[in-house]
Length: 345
Image (cartoon, rainbow, N blue to C red; front, side, top):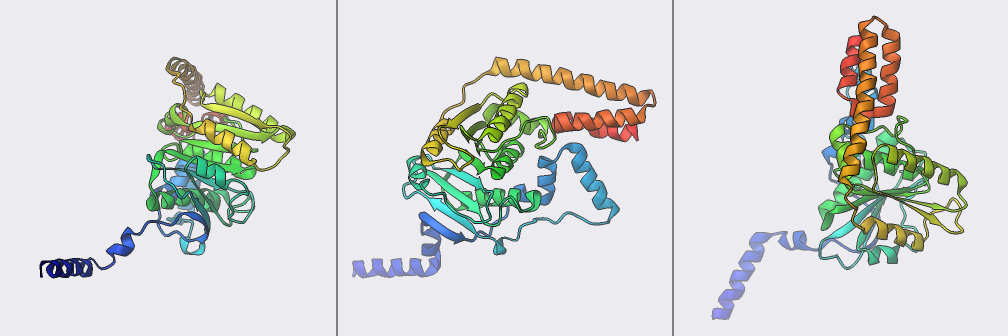
């Protein structure tokens, strides 16, 4: 009789719970094609993309054009019900949570590169990539928000270690990955740059605002992976790496794949890159502070020059100098560049 009462109580509990069993079911592992996501994040909102991924003067110009045309930015440029993703989840979750690699492709398909699955298993890393996110798609309207939404939705479904969330890409997708790593260092802790990169201080990509930039300098890890016979992209990497050192970014590594041309990282090259990404960054506080102080002096001198030009009525020269500062220093010069622009009109 006592056993019967227990069964009846359990039945009542399950009946009252309704869909509890469905909610508690573990998210699937393995390779999943045509995955649909449904959750949005403020990080992928159009206004946030403009704020983080454009220079201050470029963002102000966008806002001015919208005001003149009496229009507003669309809240989210992506309609997730129309989007599909490929997702690979290792069967065994690490004790500290999965690592995550959000991959931006140059091609239109959502696919897992051949041979990458065992490497992802070894590092306990989830892989996600969006369809219709290749080089032919709009950067700010599709490629960047799709990557952000992929990261957010995976982190809602699976136990992900927030300190091991990376963005990567190949060729043109790698250049997008660098932009996202710069603009979202509070989401991505590093980037896998496979045969595609850009130099800093050239507007594309712009330097982010000071708080994000400091976080990027201190916590982000970049790994460049390019084939030894891919001369064009090796030179791009050299320019990018050189600019990183000039701008006080020391968490960088350069991996050259023997015998490879302009091609996707092999499983062995991927394993080497993930090993480096997983390694702790050495602390270089004194070197970083000295480098930052030098950048601050350069910026202060340039801003003072614009103020002097404006004060002497040389508005055209002041405006030209402001644009050069915006191109070189990006968000580091805000809000001063915006204030000086208003004064020089």
